[in-house]
Image (tube, rainbow, N blue to C red; front, side):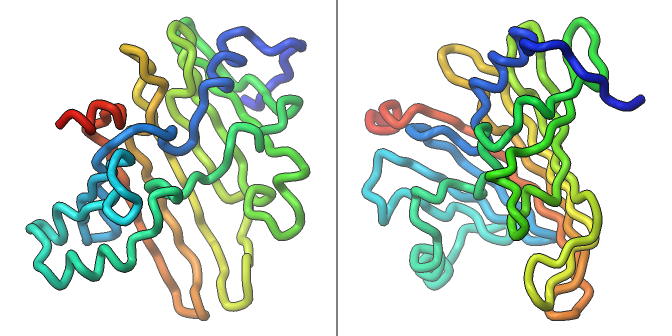
Length: 218
């Protein structure tokens, strides 16, 4: 069933959910992140209360504790903390409010489709090639999940062809004073890189959230 337009203004639950949407982890939160890339698994801890050079630590690599060389290589190569965990796919301000369409709903949740603002979807920008679906919880309004999918094959740069891209992100509901926080991200990419067929499956799981002030007391 195609989406259908909703008379303006948007429902209160949707406006509240969008206002609270953080597509990456909000500032001030410590957390652990487990990354599984194809068959490789890595576990990290982020603590914003520590000095920038020590905010990321590697606790597991390929099912075991990292050795000294692996830990040193990780410390040199890990992006600065300001980059967060996984880079956000978009910001809530990228969503074009007039594009929101209700697809289906029940008493608990509603599914909405959306597009992105023209300023975020220029000819060379990735968002212009993606479609967005939002699953919105209504009783405690928040975005419970979103999905991004490639509309059609796309060549972002010379030598790279994206045939399939799907990114699915789920959130913990807001509770006990914390906002809705990312819980897991699942993505699948298939295409060609330097003309070589490539496929990647990536899963991120976020656990052990704590406010940075709580980390200081540990």
